[in-house]
Each structure stands twice: as C-alpha cells, then as structure tokens.
Length: 91
Image 1 (spheres, rainbow, N blue to C red):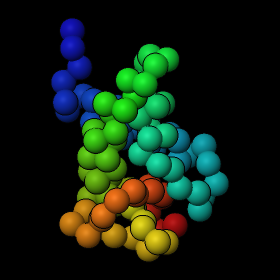
Image 2: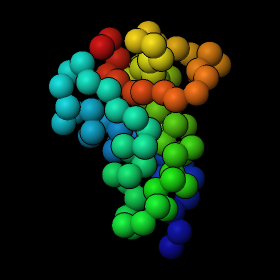
Image 3: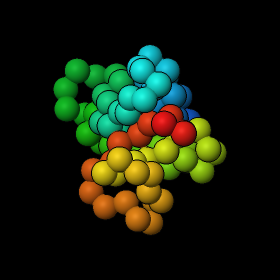
Image 4: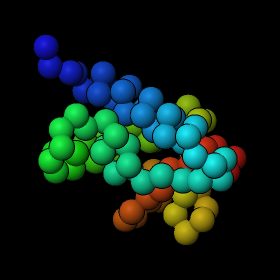
C-alpha cells in the first residue's frame, strides 16, 4: 500500500525531530538530512523527498517545534529564499 502525502509528511516530521534530538541543542540540519534519513533506498531517490521535507519543516514551524533560520535568524516561509536549515525552536 502506497504512503499518502499526509503519512509521508508526518514521517518526515518525526525524522526531523529525531535528527535534532540526536544533535547538540544549538545544531541545525538541512532538509536533505531528513530526506536521506527517510529514504529507504541506497540511490539518489532521496532527492524526491526534498520538497516534502521542506513542507514537513514548515509544518513543525507552525506547531512551534522548530524554526527555519537563514543567515542565523529565523525566517517565515514567505521570506525564505534559497537553502534553509532547521533547528529546535528557541535555538
């Protein structure tokens, strides 16, 4: 049975939280870290999970669990341009 978009987003949200919990409190991750961790193959297929990983990060931002910084300061989804990082909220 194929994974739905909602299931994928929730799984990526959990992967993001798990990755951050394994790192220093001030550390950040790239959405590609979550995509690679969630991908179950050993080829470049993780790239297809990049946009879903970014969406999962923004859902976690809305929930107050993480923040997305650029140039060291948190940005809103509408302000983000280019590569993003993900870190624990308040970091």
